[in-house]
Amino acid sequence: MQSTLAGRLTSIYLALNLVALAVVSVSVFFNLGPNGNRLAAITVSSSTLVFTASIFLIVVRRIIAPLETMTDFMQHANLRRLGARLDIATGDELEQLSRAINTMLQRLDASMQRIQRMSFVDTVTELPNRERFKQEADEVIKSAISTKGVGAAISIDIDRFLRVQNTLGKVIGEELLGLVTERLDAAVRASDRIVRLKNCETRPALLARMGGSEFAILIPDVEDPTGAGKFAQLVAASLRQPFELQHHRIVLGASCGIAVFPQDGESGDEIIRSAELAMTHARNAGGGRSMFFTRKLNQRALSKLILENEIRQGIEKNQFVPYFQPKVDLGTGRIVGCEALVRWNHPKYGMVSPARFIPAAEESGLIGPLGDVILRESARYAANWLLRGIALRVAVNVSTAQFSDDNFDHKVCTALKESGLPPSLFELEITESIAMSNPERVQRLLEPLRLKGVKIAIDDFGTGHSNLAALTSLPFDVFKIDQSFIHALGKDKHAPALIETIIAMAGGLNYETVAEGVETEEQAAFLRKRGATLGQGYLFGAPMAPEAFEAYAREWVQNGIQPPLPEKKNYHDNVQAAPAELSNQSKVA
Ligand code: C2E
Ligand code: MG
Ligand code: MG
Picture 1 (tube, helix red, strand yellow):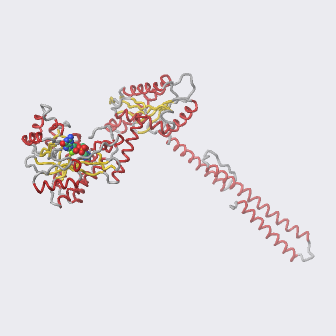
Picture 2 (cartoon, protein in one colour; picture 1 turned 180 degrees about the vertical axis):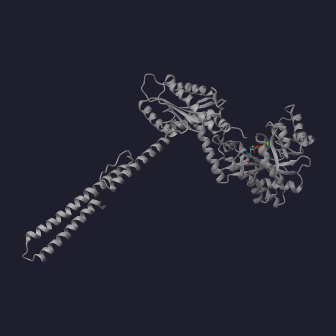
Picture 3 (cartoon, rainbow, N blue to C red; picture 1 turned 60 degrees about the vertical axis):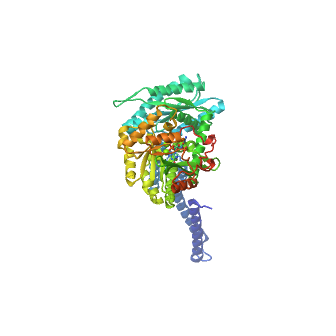
């Protein structure tokens, strides 16, 4: 059992009394003799008792009582009641200690209040923040459920805000947020008139900054959910009016997502998620519009999430593998290289084509690690073929994410070094649109690799608005003529002239040309006649699994002629129609 100070002092006091009594009894017995004066003995022992009792009372009053007050007080303070004051007036060190404790708690109280404020208020706009919005939404939804009421949460993203901030700087960005807040605030004050129940005493609408360029408005009660849509349009219209700031005229806009509660969310977290999901769709659809949350949106987001998770796991479990498609010298008819094309060896759906998963991999940022796997694996396969006497140049596709990675050139060098593949047998295919989006970066990132011997090809040439000046100055070696031109042969009367022009331009720049998607002898004959260097397409072989490709290429390399195309089932791109959840609407980049 825990002993208190008072308890311990009482024990000491009783012990002292016993000792005093013993001393007194012994002294009485010996000094006054067996027949001594009892009265004197009683007097001595009583006065000793009175003396120790008064000492004890003084100790209790001056030390124990203040200490007990202090203990009670600190227990209170421990329960975060920091506003209370400790009142001890003993005029000694204990009183000084109590004053010091009061000052300390006052400061602690002020800091706690500041921290509390900061955790619920956005410091830039002074608006309630996401946490506060969530709490308020929790309460408002609870009350809507109990009163069978309806309310709405509107998530707003300011279009172009980040671009303006990146151009004009953070200070102007913050001032702009202040002006945006004023407009939103005015809209919120007008919300009663526009969407809310009339003659009803309810909580005011709440405007909050959710982070970055995102705001949200919580309308606790709406007369009719469609009114929330109209209100969002008014909000967006007010933000479309130009902002004047430090001699700049800034035009923004807003993407709004509307979720109605309780149907679209029964808690703060849920309603925010629904409204933000709708807002993201409005933003992805080009911005400047409002969208209501629907179950379908939710389903789509969920499928995307499942797909992203599966891709992540697929990378960990080495389910992504390169397939190889031959590239043939149109002049000699010999195989000279191949293109690595990623396939997903999905445990449930079999081999899945990149069109099914590359858009999701790009959106989720997983294309970076996925591309790195294909880069390393392709170099490794090509190096092994070389050791077995098959020298073929392998080309690997480069995604936007890989191209934006400052470490990309290092990764290429590491893949080559680790595999032992000579750089001259390695090629990078970069789409025309990626190359033209940042020609300086092409120069900086790819020229050093090219100087080492790596070849650089522009993929899907003819589809990406090339800047002719950039084309001549950038470090390219190969134009890959987009397959749409080849497929148009015999169908579009302009196709031959377009292909001839590309081949002539490549010849003038001393570049190789690879015609993609060659499927017929007629197409191959036309390209051969016009001087295209290489051909790639089902006519020469579809993408194949590494082992099938090696067997196929060996025959070709050793005998110098194209072997009969393997049975379709052996080599063909056996992409199965993967079900909808593996499908993402967007096109392959
Ligand atoms: P791409 O780089 O232009 O690849 C050529 C595409 O055309 C391949 O589709 C190939 O299978 C297909 N193809 C080849 N010959 C023919 C033909 O004769 N007729 C027709 N109709 N099609 C033919 P695939 O493998 O589905 O790849 C599609 C796109 O996915 C590729 O276009 C490339 O942009 C991307 N991709 C593939 N693998 C990777 C990769 O490892 N990383 C990255 N970032 N992208 C990849
Ligand atoms: Mg390619
Ligand atoms: Mg291509």
